[in-house]
Image 1 (spheres, rainbow, N blue to C red):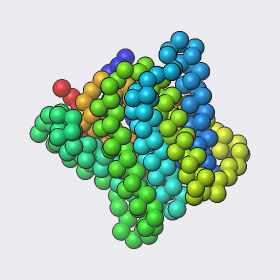
Image 2 (image 1 turned 60 degrees about the vertical axis):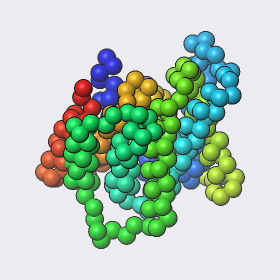
Image 3 (image 1 turned 45 degrees about the vertical axis):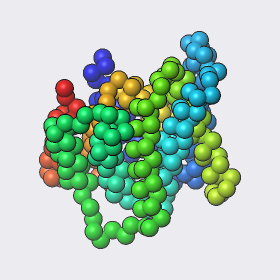
Image 4 (image 1 turned 180 degrees about the horizontal axis):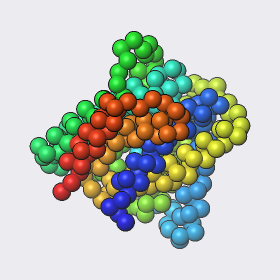
Length: 282
């Protein structure tokens, strides 16, 4: 069962591409994310109580998981949602964030003392090349400066969060750790709203369906799998599966949103898949 977790993660995480735009079209990005992670926090809190996990933990463990949530749910997702709300093309945002496995591989050696083999680097480069082929890069597209800056900040945040999560003492049950991380994301977005944003949410049917998808399938499902994989495997191997997310998102967009999918896209998907296989196999 554990062996199929990466595939389940890729499918669930990629599906967020389908529902991000409807959420942003019906709400301020930070209000939407505060709403999302407030409910995610309550969900993990209730689950932890039901499963009789100790939810009151020492200050060190709480701070570690809380900060991880600020980086991942707060800065990373906030940066991505904000950039798209400012007109950043989703494909280009995804391409920039997809640099994460390359940066993580470069840093996991000196920071985590992980050995990144030549085989892994070959897989990473193939994975990135395949992703570039799928997403393309429209030189004529106007890229908003603020959107580009937010995406770069998101890239730094997800890389830092992944490495930070791997360095944690790992003394907390997964549900309690996820609860504290959701709280970190919620607090971050509330602070942003108070200081900078003008929050609004249109609780339309479209928003509720899209938000339900991101809460249950992405936050409860995909993120829990990701945290499990980071604890179980090396950081460098785990993040390599992120190369499959943009191609899989493109495939889903073709299936559900009638977006074009060319032969070059299919070839890129194949190359990215081969790269991930090479980078993650023992």
